[in-house]
Amino acid sequence: MGNFMGGSAPAMAAQIGDGFILLSASTIRGFAPSELTLLRLEIDKLLREARAIVPPQDDAHACQTRNRRIGRLSSALQVLSNTLVSRR
Image 1 (cartoon, rainbow, N blue to C red):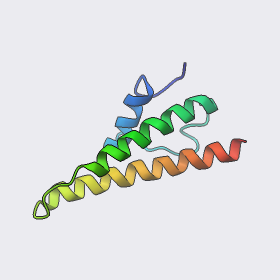
Image 2: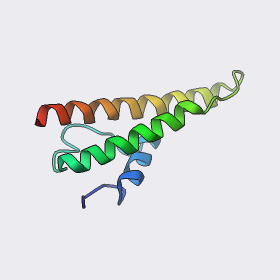
Image 3: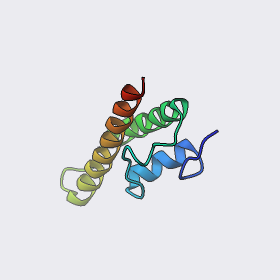
Image 4: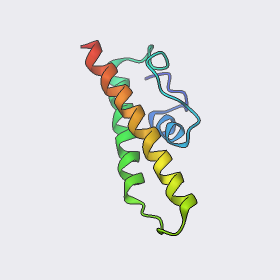
């Protein structure tokens, strides 16, 4: 299996969500389509979990943290989807 930066697809997805890894086309150039699909599934799972968390409306910091995480995961998901479509 692959050369995921965090050691595995779930770990890499978590690091993307936390902002430690920025996903770009050059970052995932060496990955096989099956590895990209696995990473996409893990990112999608984390995105659903992040959207399920509803912080209190008066906690601005928690709202910002949640929105940043959702933004990072959404953009990574878009990069992965575009890469998978372009490789077909």
